[in-house]
Image (tube, rainbow, N blue to C red; front, side, top):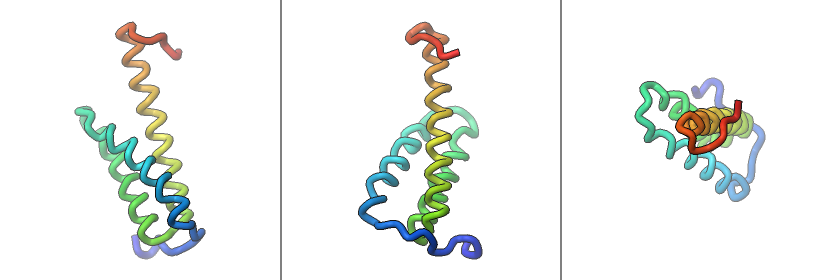
Length: 93
């Protein structure tokens, strides 16, 4: 990882502190789901966010945050479809 991660796209610490915290907190709550192997991508993205944040690599931070938001959207759609299958909410598809 040291070969690829380097300081680029310097981001102000105070501006990104709350955004990174929120993006890490939301997938962290979904890590409690007892679905086999569903936690690995989220944990890897959280690790990438940590590496990028510690090494001040803005490019990797943006990529990891985007990946984390995509994973969160996929999990939200899956949860919505499960709830729609039970009849609690209307279906998306």
